[in-house]
Length: 203
Image 1 (cartoon, rainbow, N blue to C red):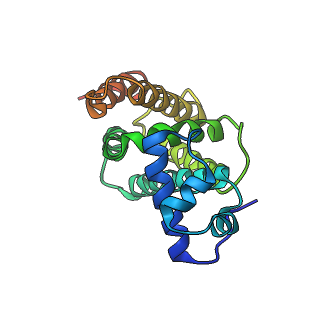
Image 2 (tube, rainbow, N blue to C red):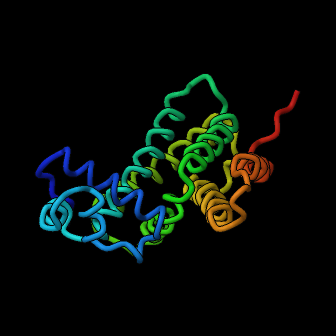
């Protein structure tokens, strides 16, 4: 079941209200009535737009996945950069996006991981997650084709390694000290990944 779309303005009001409440209270302490009140809309309007709190969260998760997909599209279009440079930039851009709204991503990131592991199948997010992973596989395959990445593992294996490192670091950061910076952590992890998969240049 996908989110209903009756009015763009009310839809955006609902998502903005839900995002603020999820960040402040958490997912489980926020009800559909709370979201309706914060959005200045009737509870019926909220249900007509989305049908459930799960679908509201799905819409917010879908936004994050679309942003990730856009980053991957730009990486695939960047013909002049090496694959190592592109992977480092992906880690950096992900860090900047997550650091910009840590409280919301604390609520949403767990849902993205459920989608990744096939534990959730409602809404737009599962298809968007598959598309993003396919783009990541394409990026790894291109790097192997150019002789920049180790050709022995499958491109899917390399994409899974990238994805798993990213997920583990972000999960640790989201629930760690509030003043911890994500970008240096992901920069270090990019180095760890590339030490294992990048083909050394020879003079």
